[in-house]
Image 1 (cartoon, rainbow, N blue to C red):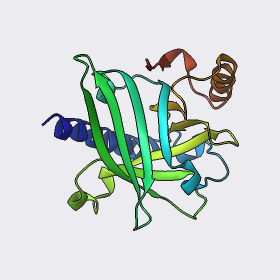
Image 2: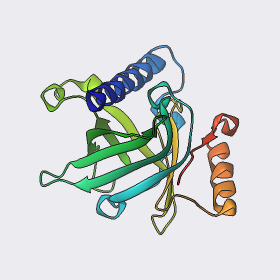
Image 3: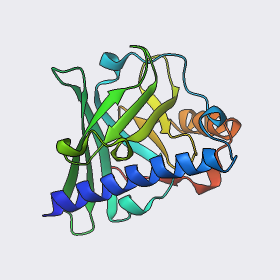
Image 4: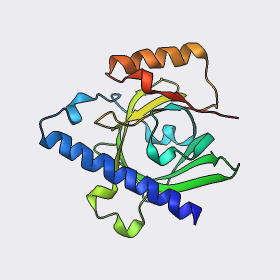
Length: 189
C-alpha cells in the first residue's frame, strides 16, 4: 500500500511538472530555453546509486526524513530503471519504482521519467523532465532539474560530500538562475 501511494505521488509530480512546463511556454514565460544542460551524458556511466545531498523542498517528498537515494540501472530494452528510496519518520524505508528514457541522441542529458504504471506510458503527461544540468567529470556529483526550475536535486555517489564541492555547486546553480536560499540539505546516515 505504501509503495503504491509513494508511486502515485511521484506520478502526480511528473504530471504537474509536465503540465506546468506546457502552461509556462503557452503564456510566454521562459520554457525549455531558460535552463541549460551539460553538453553530453554517458548514460551507462551514470548508472548506480546516487545519494540525495540537497533539494528544493517539494510536496511529494514531505514525508521523507532522510536516507534518500536513487538507484539507476539499464534495462534490456535500453530504458533505465529508477528506484527512489527514503526513510519515513517511523524509521521505515519507502520506495517508488519508475522508468526513464533518454530524449534525443545517445549522449543527450535530457531524460523523461515516469512512476505511473507501464500501461499508461503512452500518455505524454505521465512523463516528467529529468535534465542533468551539472555533472563533474568523474560522475561523482550531479545537479538535476527541469525546464521551469521548480524542482532541483543535488546528488552524489557518497552520502556526504566535501564542503568546498557543495559550495562550488551552489555557486554554479546560482549562475544558472536558481534561488539557492530555497535549497534544503538532506539528512544522510
